[in-house]
Image (cartoon, rainbow, N blue to C red; front, side, top):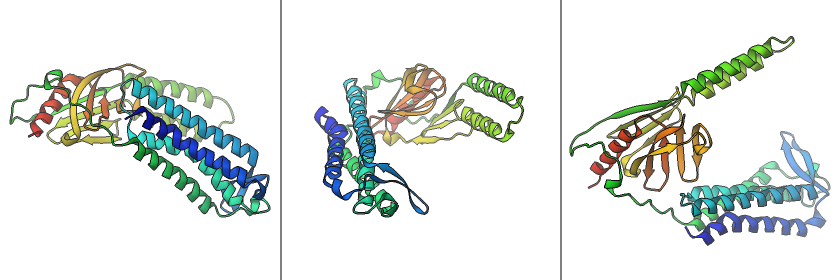
Amino acid sequence: MRTARLTLATAGIPFVVLAVAYVLRTAWAGRLPDTIVSHWGTGGPDRGTALTSMTAWTLGLGAAAAVVATVTALVMRHRGAFVPRTAIGFAAWLATLPAGVLIASMWATLDVASWQQARSAWGAVTLAIGLSVAAGALATLLTGPTPRAAIPEPRDLPSAGLAPGERAVWIGAGTNYPMAFAGIGVIGLFLVLQLSLDDLDVMPYALILIVAVLALAATCRVRARVDATGVTLTLGLFRFPHRTLTFDEIASAHVEQMSVWSAGGYGLRRGFGYTAFKVRAGEALAVTLTSGHVVKATVDDAERAAGLVNDLVAAERP
């Protein structure tokens, strides 16, 4: 992906849309009231915002989002990381959405005496979403197709020593039960202290405890299965989310070390070029897809799992 195309997709398209929004604001200035509609309720328009203020925060927010997206994408590319075209399209959509909101609000209030007489919310929402989606789609097309990852030579990849014609199954997991138990203990202690006070409703705190327990249960265990059908990954005690990778989309597998800060935390994490099923620091099974995307899972004995994946991928190829 060329730097110029990347910059044009993440910054050029959003700034063009922002400029169009400002031009329309200037052209329509004489046909708009000082306050334009900014929110609709079930009964119609129920909130207005000064045109000057709405112009400032929407265009400022869109410009900031475009700059952040561009800098992030360029840094990732400079470091050799995979930058998916879908992420570029999403960034362009997000950066142009505020401009779409401004244009839609101005359109809804155009040629009316006050914002209370604004047009239907459906037309405004369709205009705002449609404009930003079109910008995101254009950015995705401009980025071009995602280059396929170069498949490393077999000697660089771990192997389980699977002979031709043999089949094997590997099942493994990675856990972090101490974090879950400690988290539940701390939250439980906090709730006990809060409930010891007078005149407090129990129900909100019970809901907090339930949500916390569910969140910790969802991030205390990751399970992986490698067999003839592919690689299956699940997260948490409820085994959700769930993802299956088939061998026709897998390029290779290797072992990667993840720190506490890798991927930005624990749970299901997604960033530029990777998806991580992470419950702890340490070794992780890293499966590189033919698209260049890497799916990681912090499981024990990751090298054996990676070796079996590579052997099965090789067996599937003619």
